[in-house]
Image (tube, rainbow, N blue to C red; front, top):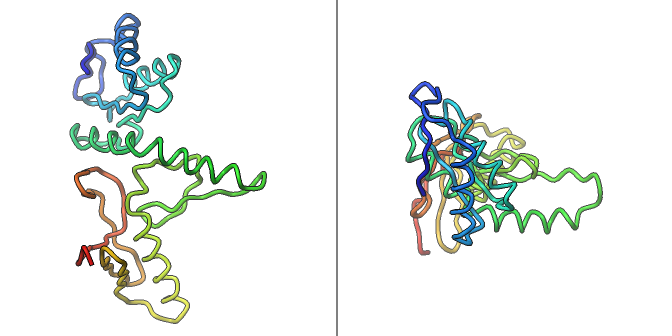
Length: 202
């Protein structure tokens, strides 16, 4: 979907996103019947003003699931920012429903954290769905490294073999990371533990 607005390479506003244009966009969005949206605008990593204005307008119109590239990947490379926002938008309804169902079963004042692809825990309210793609394998690496440290081992290779893949990682007292991810057809920018899949379709 196209709209009339433009930032320059430094993030300066060349063409403002006007109230009239926001109304036109909101109407076009509502006409599609689609309830999940990803927004990626040129140079928004330097200045997110137009992405934020658009999200706020869509929220006021009842479109609550909006993933902004400037929030998820505030860095250069429009296509990769857009792909990251799309992946997050696609995962958001499923992840939000799942986490919401878990949250409802927890006692009041519970601390509810979620594992990320980078092997860390974040509060459920701060969790971005795009960070869940490799959280399972990451949890395996963190668990193996923890057991190794408790056993006095500081250097190791992990091997996580299941029914469909074998995931391998290296640990030498510190974790290795990567930031450009390809998971199936998805290409996105998100921090993750460096894990290699060396076998599939077991």
